[in-house]
Length: 117
Image (cartoon, rainbow, N blue to C red):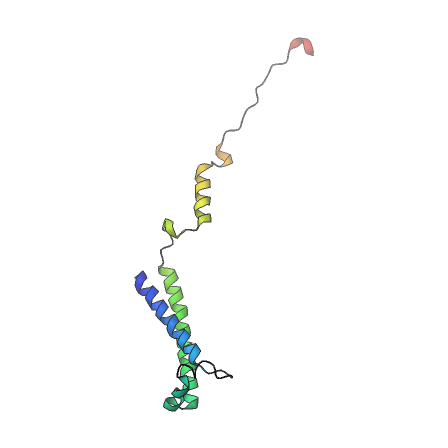
């Protein structure tokens, strides 16, 4: 399941990057470089812009959903996935006992001498 989600996530990200790069900006963008300028003949000038805009929106939503799915299905309880700080805090908490569990030290009680009063 993890491999399927991660490959789907990478695939959506790649298509999202391509859809963003193909959109023409004010300066022409990279659309002309990768052949995006010829897409105007297939969809019409306005059709290309709306198609790429809608594709970008759909891919962005799919990317966000895949992020949520990938995070929710990732194993977070395994020891390999914990950060070094979490592992160090767990190690220290096992080594030291809480202060309330330790017995209080008692001072020796000496009886006062009778002649020193």
